[in-house]
Image 1 (cartoon, rainbow, N blue to C red):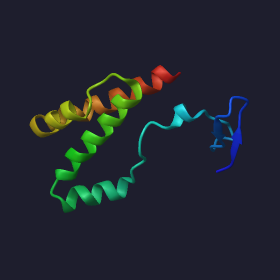
Image 2: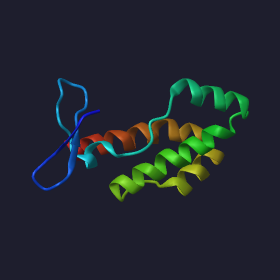
Image 3: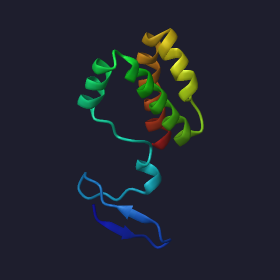
Length: 101
């Protein structure tokens, strides 16, 4: 990844999509998790890793947007009514994309 400074001293890494430049705040949302590893961990831990995943993802989204469920509420929902998060997680992610433009 090539780093190029802008006039204000911020670094703008070149991402894909034809070398389009993106400011740091646009891509520093959270950790990218491998789908295969997540599925494997969910199977090996008998589903407990899904709770960790929901907590982590929702905590990162709340940290990025300063709104949303947050990790604690997502963990409680994952334990009590996990099917609800199948709808809330993509809705929150969609709201993040919509807010970004």
